Length: 109
Length: 115
View 1: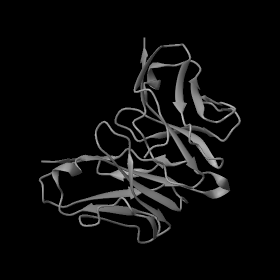
View 2: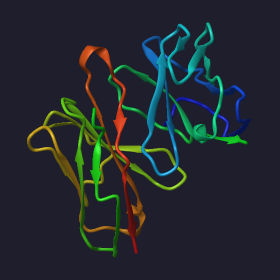
View 3: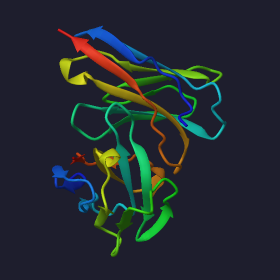
């Protein structure tokens, strides 16, 4: 079973920041938070991951709370191409990925 | 860098028929995964290979599904005989594990429809 809880769906206006929350209250000390997204008719795509520090790359930022029980993926300037299902996954390195239902993010023009 | 290749992209078969899917991972990636994604759900791991050895096949329905990775590169997933509930997208992914990188790279998937 997935170890995370995400909202089923979210909407965001184009050009605004999209903030996707994820709860992982049972996360263990050696487990990382991974984010993947899946655009319609494509395979999942890796976005970002982190252990306890905030992380940023060219795609997104990941903010992890100090107690590590929740995190937020931030897409700073959402575009229509960011419409996808976003999966938050908790796993230790090299462990298998266990996908939940994810959050269906719709970017509106 | 070329991505994970899969073929065919689409397949329609009748129940009780056999079908095979092919995957070519990213060059140099030792770890290969097959996932099943039923409509409306997240992908579910079926089998994981490390080089040509099976690491995890606990979720593979072994009475009808089989997979191999003979030379540690390409892989095939077979279903024989297919059931209606096997209708899904079958995704292949690969990972390098070099340098502590554990991100999985996914192919576009094969959409199977069993009628």
